[in-house]
Image (tube, rainbow, N blue to C red):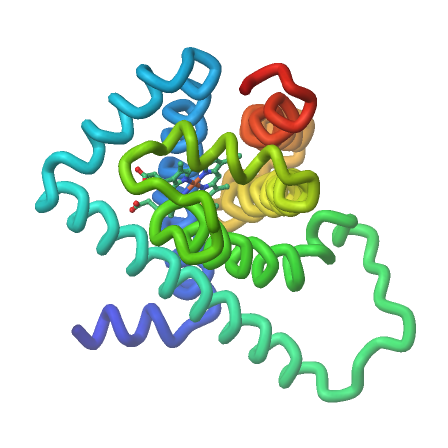
Length: 218
Ligand code: HEM
């Protein structure tokens, strides 16, 4: 127990926790996107898939609990690291532009909270149905189409998923650093791995609202 609290109390411990929970959340986002791409196969296939996921309540709630736990730890560790960073530099840089901190790294501070807000909206839209006046429980295909047909809702999804891709890109990059996979010789490979995953997730997720908005999927 002492080891765990000691580890959590250290900056490295928090970074390791962020990396481990990040990997689990990344796995979920990847699986979720692959499952959702069945939208292109029509209502029957997508609804059957959703029904399958919902059918075993014990498995469903176990997955939900793990996800919720990971989100809570990931956010808490991020906020604590951010506060610790700030308090270790009470007088802020006038111009803060160190070369190693690129655009994606600087956006982490706000892309994280925006993705979190998006998840809350997304759950109200497709899982609970509060934010979707056309919501029909069990008819996932209908719910997705009726939301994405509205330009500003499709816009929210596209923007949030663009930010998520940027967040994932930098998250993967940081993860390599945390685990010490940062040999300069492989810097290029690491960057390309992070870019490839972020682009694949971003493109897959953005394609869906775009396809409905343009009438490709009805
Ligand atoms: C365009 C992209 C996306 C589509 C079309 C989509 C679609 C859906 C649908 C239809 C559901 C409800 C499933 C059901 O009731 O059976 C759902 C649930 C969910 N989505 Fe997404 N989603 C997208 C992106 C995302 C992203 C980027 C995240 C996270 C960052 C996410 C996180 C979740 C979560 C946590 C749930 C609740 C799962 C549960 O029921 O336990 N989704 N999504």
